[in-house]
Image (cartoon, rainbow, N blue to C red; front, side, top):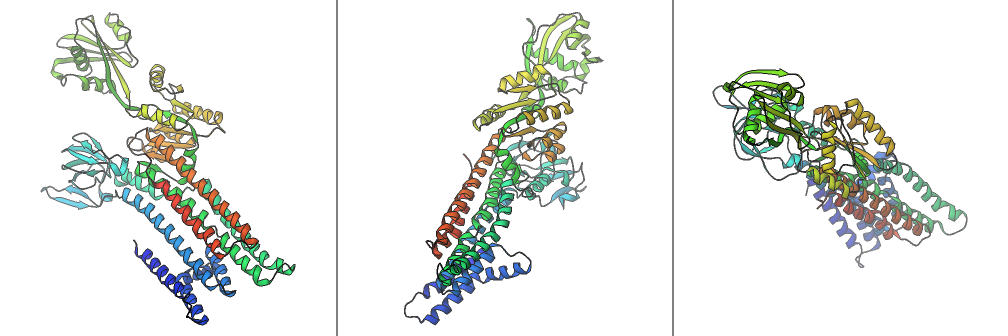
Length: 617
């Protein structure tokens, strides 16, 4: 427990002890009053001080003002123990609330304790020099030892190790890193020493982006939070005026004594304090943001929790979002008499000097690294493919038009994808299919969205129509639009939002620079945080730190639970307030009922709010 909480707890115990002593029958009335005054000063002195200070600042109608007027008025009519009890329970409620907020804040702080302390740079004599991560230029080779956080994004140039990325992605399974692998800052190096060539400065790193998101997460307030703020601003002066009228009008009309109606007015003031609403609603959103962060889902503001909770349509980019964004060989179809391995190796040799992603996929699928010495010359035919002389033989690798140039008739492709036909010395050898594969979590993502109540899924892509429709059919996506330019995506997204208006919000999930305009346009923009471009992350409202599309459904579930708890607290708090206010106005609620309707309701609402930070199964 923090020092401030311990001090409040000591004050609560001291005040409760003095209040208990005041009930001893042998004490004189004066001693009882003095004990109650001492107890009140200990437990409520700071509240009265804040009320006076705020009055001089022009902030009159706040909870401190209500509590001070009500309790000092109780003293004025001789209700000494009740006055102390009101302050006592109020401070207990505030302590509960402060502890709950600190727990939520600490959970986020522990989760986001990824800020690197230093970076190690190796000097010419082999010694390591520690510098601040902000001082490391892009392109510098840094050394990360076991137990240290990776300070900047980069590529491993030497060493291999296991990395703990749980603080970034929410996944506990370590990831292996070896030569050539891209690693992100904030990951914890577990086993081996890594030498990493940085790909950017600290300000451009993943960890800097994440910390910025979390630190600014409360900058955008939800509509519900704004409503509560406005509600409290107008509600407080209204109830103060009502209390004054309650104290003055009935006696003037001869409906009772002044002391009776003054007592009821004071009880009315205590009941009316809107602590439960003002405290529990922001706390619920804060707890929801904390739970999402632990899952590797970062919200840029609580307003996006509210928007995501109402999502009924989810629009996806394809490449890098639903698919891995990299080509691999997905099918090998040799003609009779040709081995599949031979077909792929021959295609890889023909493509040995090409920088095209398809060529890289063919070389990666070869049974062994292609030997450049076997390739004598290469001729590229734009839009058709490549002719290479391998071991003195002309090898054709390309599309149907190149096969026509070679004088052979290719087979009809067996599956959808980028097809590379291969011919050698005028004989057709077969074809290889290269395609961007669907992420293993994508099917789970789509089924999770359907379970979450998402009514329609849409895919927008610049890829070929046949490829897009194949992916959409495989995943069960409702609507697909292919061969789109960035401007086309924006136009289609506008149409989708207009058509679906009034049927819930529309979310867009993407990762590329070309997705940034659509991310901005959508009701909720969701970006892939690991492989996503800086432009996409900047434009998005929600960031998925491990590029797992299944976390869209997780985010919706967290958002809906958070908003449901907010609504529960609003209905509960207002319902109890109205009921007890009416009872207090007609004299059927005493000061103890007033204490429960204020402090008791606040404590219950706070405990309910904490549920938003509990892990979903």
